[in-house]
Amino acid sequence: MTLDLAPAPAQGLAELYQGIAAPEFARWKIRARAIAAELAATISARDRANLDPHAEIELLRQAGLLGLAAPRDFGGGGASLLQAMEIVRLISAGDGSIGQLIAYHYSNGVWTYILGTPAQWAETTRHVAERGWFQGGVSNPRDQWSEIETEGTRRFISGKRSFATGTAISQIITVSLWDKGRRVHYQIPTDRAGISFGNDWDNLGQRLTASGSVTFDRVELFEHERLSALDHWPGESAERDGLRGLFSQIIFAQFYLGIAEGALEAAETYIREEGRPWPESGLSSAVEDPYNAVILGRLSAQVEAGIALADRATLAFQEALFAGPDLARDDWGRLAVLVDQAKVVANDVSLEVTARIYELTGGRSTANRFGLDHFWRNIRTHTTHDPVSYRAREIGLARISGTLPVPRVYTEPPKAAT
Image 1: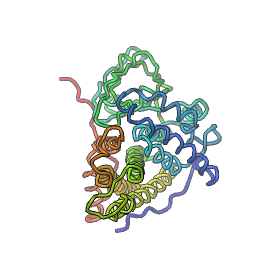
Image 2: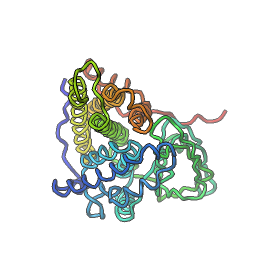
Image 3: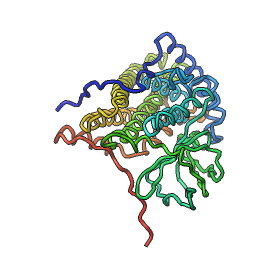
Image 4: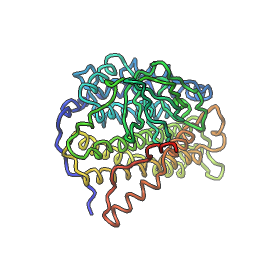
């Protein structure tokens, strides 16, 4: 069985996402690396403070990175999804929390493209490009809410979501909920009356992602805010809607790999500047230790292989995104398997890299002043987001039985009170 995707024709707005020419994109990468270096220099203190990352997002905004993936016609940078993911990795190498946030921001832009009408997508995208809006989302599918409350012609939502990454620092949020047993999505301003934040994210890692709870107390919704493109989608919309979950897995893989790259770079710097040779080695420098070289070489090769696979999945996703109604269920399934493969590899290699760097750096490197622990804590925290074994199972079933994945549902509508 082949798992390769046949090329899909670009349609609709695809011509707006042709990407940035290499010389210009190189300048964007220089900008991103400078921000990553600035974040890396202060990460230990910021991690301990555990504050919402308003200043960090402002760095991204001032550098134009929030609008990087918005089309030039809308005032944005015009980057392709593949280029946006490279920026995600660069930022993640310096600070995994901020890498996750910019990845989620780009992902929410894709969600708006899928769920919104062209007019809705254009309005939000212009604000992102021209005003530096940060897009958040309240979409954890395992949190159950009551359905929309109605009062005459007015509509309200109430309830609490346990996790709402980046929402507290955003200007606009996409809210997913149930309405008469059907999943619906609204895009509303974050400062709307009735929205409050728990400031209760105090976890092992990814501490600077503003991932705490959000509470809605009779927050009013308006019809023009409902993202309604799929209401008019020709034929079956499950594959189109299901692209959202696949892109989530892609961004996870990409920022995991960025964190792994940052961990390797930090370990290499430590060996050069602080490392001491083991007495049994007979060497005068830790840099000369062949065991260090072998471990670094193998880990580096694994990270590069993971990046190649994640980039391949990103390119295939972009083709599927712009295929429009031509995206067949089997094409969706083959894409899902490719994304699964990228996620499994990124999950495993990032956990290995962030744990094994201590074999290279030794006991003194565990001192808090070196801050090497945040790489592992960040990866260990986010890789619990969803069980990677289920992604591996999908791959295995596709290869053994030819059973391709279908769009997934992680939760059911709330049951009526009895």
